[in-house]
Image 1 (cartoon, rainbow, N blue to C red):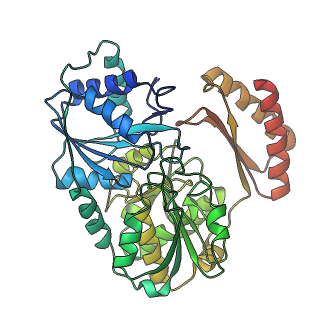
Image 2 (cartoon, rainbow, N blue to C red; image 1 turned 135 degrees about the horizontal axis):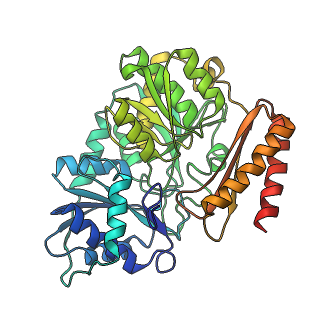
Amino acid sequence: MKKYFGTDGIRGIPQKTLEEEIVKKVCSSVEKILKPQSIALISDTRESCDLITDWIIQGFSDSVRLTNYGVLPSGAIPILINEFDEDLGIIISASHNPSEYNGIKLIGKNGSKLDDEIEIKIENEMDNILIPEKKGIFRNSLEGYKSYLDFLNNVNDIDFDKFDLVIDSANGSAYKIIEDLLVSKKAKFKMIANNPDGKNINKECGATYPFTLQKNMDIGQIGISFDGDADRLIMIDENKEVVNGDLLLTILSKYFSEKDKLNKDIVVSTVMSNYGFKIAMDKFGFNLIETPVGDKYVAEAMKKNEATLGGEQSGHIILRDYLPVGDGLLTCLLVLQAIDYFDISITEFRKNHLTEYPQKLTNIELEKSLNDEEIEFINQIALDMSIKLDLDGRYLIRNSGTEPLLRVLVEAKNLESMESFSDELLSKINNYLS
């Protein structure tokens, strides 16, 4: 079991649940175990990013050179590591979490998130590690912005005149570069939630709050929304309906297959994927591999099985022929390319290929994450209910890997059964927790 690392790095509220000493000791342990000589830093738009940066610099010794490439989507890190021959990447971000949170993600020389085994070694080393007397050598650079923008510009060359786009950047790390990209593509678009002030990242906007984007769209337009560090993408179709990761994967899998880019006909997703998505993959004749929740586990399964496409319902999509991590901007460009290729609207594609089961995900706030015995007890409650009520569907109960929440997913073949089962299960769980 890991004490500090979740499914997506280390997160908390700086100077409260994310302490200065923890960040410094993580960095000192990283230096001892991985021995990097150069590190690429990027961040999102939270006001605490400068503070976290200072802690990181103090956690490394003067044997390490740290280059701050500024505010950039997290998908830029593998590009920076490769182009500037960095040994390690650190992303300062709490992704989709509220602005008061922040954290760090560690990206290895290969451009991927660190394996669980390495994270455990880092944590074990922290008990005895000493903070260096002399801090790391630090500089700022604007070179990474151009490198990442060049990468995006070279992904495809479709006719953007066919699309009328509305972009929600979540007041996060994509706010400037997505505008520069679409201007260079001569696209027709308008921006919302693109004025970060350090405190408004993800606030009633972005991939986890699509309602604001829907309100700012007209029928026939396509909505594009990112989260704070822009590693996930949620879209809105021409009928103003939400397009989650399941539909994005469905579109891309069929497109990649027709272009002979879907290696071994494998698609990787997590246990959160809708049953309707599984049916669609079966109809396409694709091999679906499921993983635990977390894009790092999707990436590991993709590497193991030599898959080129994988992702999560939450909008993390990994396209291994391009990048070893999820990148919302890259995903957006390839989805638009697929829709252009099929010469069909997203709405029509959904109607033809994906029938989603009614699904409800509820987050229950906790003071601290539940232990294995408590999770097992709650799952037994759900199992007893499913047998008694003959649930034609499924449930999934788990701790969040990024914040103190219990995530309760219920899915059924019809809306009434799903709502009824979900309401009764949540009532029983809340009674148990009270």
